[in-house]
Structures are given as C-alpha cells and as structure tokens.
Image: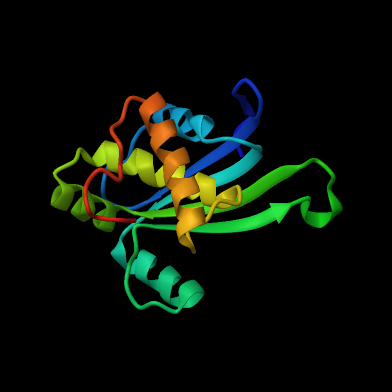
Length: 161
C-alpha cells in the first residue's frame, strides 16, 4: 500500500494494479477521483483487467458468465479486530468492457473510467442500487462527485451501469 493520502476529512491508501493490455489513467488521476468519493477512511486496490479475468471473477463471485465493467469487493471495517474505522476492499475494472461502453455512449473513456472508479468506491462505502430509492441516492451522489471533477452526468443517456 502507498502512504495515506488526505482529503479534507478522510484518508486514502491506494494501490493500483494493471493486469490489462489497455492503457489506464495515471496514479495521480486515479487518486484524485478516489479522494473525491470518500466518506470514510479507505484502503483500496484498483485492479484493471482484461475480459478473461473480468469474466472469471464475475462468474466466480456473482455467478454471471460474462465480463462486467466493475466489481467491488468489500472487506469491511475493523478487520482482524482493528479499531481504526477503515473501509478496505478491491475494485476491479474490466478495460475492454469499459472501453466498449464508452464507445457505445460516445463518451470519452476517461469520463466513463472516472464514473466507474467513483461507482466502485461508493459501493465499497455502503452505497447500493438494489431498489429505486437506493439507486436514486447513489446516482445523485455519483453525479455530484463527477460534476465536481468536471465530468458530465453519467446518467444523462439511457444506458445504466
């Protein structure tokens, strides 16, 4: 893990893994996106994968036999008896799916990547979209964070994450 990075209220320990042949944003950009989404102290690994690994993970952990754009694995707070109030987890982004979706929406891939990083971090911190009320809350938060980062509303078109 890299040293803790600070936003005004919360700390971020960020690790980035590239297991994809596709280029990914630089660490500083990923850090900026992640910091904008914090509402807790977080230790997270962002892992960028190709379709094979994305499909294997989705099949193994969700029972769905296809690669999806983002998967979030939360390890909860206070692991191993620690009382440090840190949210820990991994976020896996599948670059071929991310790039295909961005192209289909005619959006810059970096804007879509920012959205998926924010989306994954919100999941890690307890947001969900299993029902309409929770989805609206999560989408509103995502839209506000992305606007702060200078990106348009990711839900403006009809395609949903």
